[in-house]
Amino acid sequence: MAERLGVAIVGVGGAVATTAIAGIELIKAGSNSFAGLPLADRDVAGMVAYRDMEFGGWDLADDTLADCALRHGVIGEKELANGAASLNQMRPWKAVGSTGHCANIDGSNKMESGHRAAVRQIQADLQRFKEEKGLDRVVVVNLASTERMPVADAECLQSQEAFERGLDADDSAISPAMLYAYASIDAGAPYANFTPSVAADVAPLADFAADRNVPVAGKDGKTGQTFIKTVIAPALRDRALHVDGWFSTNILGNSDGLALDDPKSLESKLGTKGSVLNSILGYPVEDHIVMIHYYRPRGDDKEAWDNIDLTGFMGQKMQLKLNFLCKDSILAAPLAIEIARCLDLAQQRGEGGVQEQMGLFFKLPQMKGSNDPVHAFPEQQLILDRWLGDQGA
Image 1 (tube, rainbow, N blue to C red):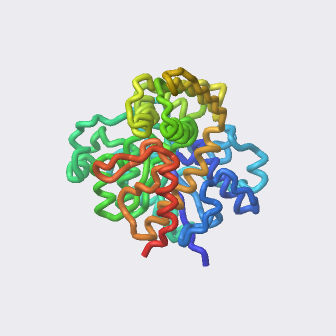
Image 2 (image 1 turned 120 degrees about the vertical axis):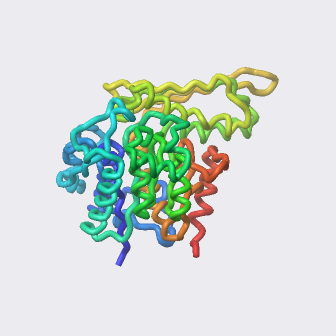
Image 3 (image 1 turned 135 degrees about the horizontal axis):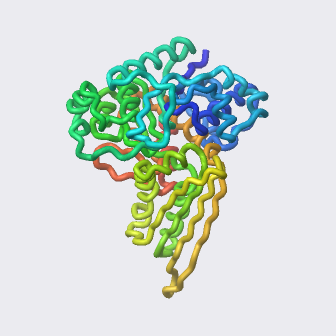
């Protein structure tokens, strides 16, 4: 009998989560389309099949997932009628919420206050999910809205012992994302951070994951503009075309864009989007500008526009202009699915702690210790391919 994997999602009522769940439900209903799923053509021993995945999770909204999906506008009545009808019966579990950490996102579906109480509830939810669905294993994927950057020198973020004291004291420096990460690791459930929020990459939690041998990966899913940037920049480097400047702007109108309309949350996002070029090219691009604008009429139809100024042979100047019109969640949902499958595979292989081989899924790959991340997409793909080909012990 095939083993079954549960995916517990933070932000399960969001556009990315409902799109991912609907896509898997359509596959279960008989769809033969695996378009957009990067690992669909890979036969990897031990990797769970798409049809053997079950979903649940937390959200501040208490609407059915079907209502959430219709509100986001990525999928519609057609998909809900043709295989994804189960979203009509799915409701989010009560979530951890904090407008202090994410100013523009709130809701009534909140669990009781207090850090330790939240951890206990998250773990109880994971156990109930596993038992009710008859699951063999569970992973947690954070698809929630972007939180503000934490205070870097907060005492509770300096060590595992200090973090434990911070939990006891309900320290405000500990964010909802950190609570989910801690609860997941403590419960032995692999944790992925698809958001720019600081979570398992904070030192106490990274160390905690290594000590418990629980796989973690992140952060900030590499879906659209940054994905293209990490594909093109290596080619410009290898052709010795000097990048004098790179101007990037985005407009989007979904809940992710609304969260980023808060300057403190935007700061977190720009930090992950702007980190890749210098590493790939090997020199600082002084005029690398990244802008994100919330524009409600676009909904999930994001537009990314790039202007690249280049210097070539004999000092001649050139330009490259890119216009990427995409559905944000259609790009992100398949990555969230594959991240869950890869984290589960890592756990089956006994490979805990930070999973560096999953870097191609993220804008700012989490690394072990002081290791520098690889950002160039072709190199990241080779790293993942080698790991997928390793059958483990």
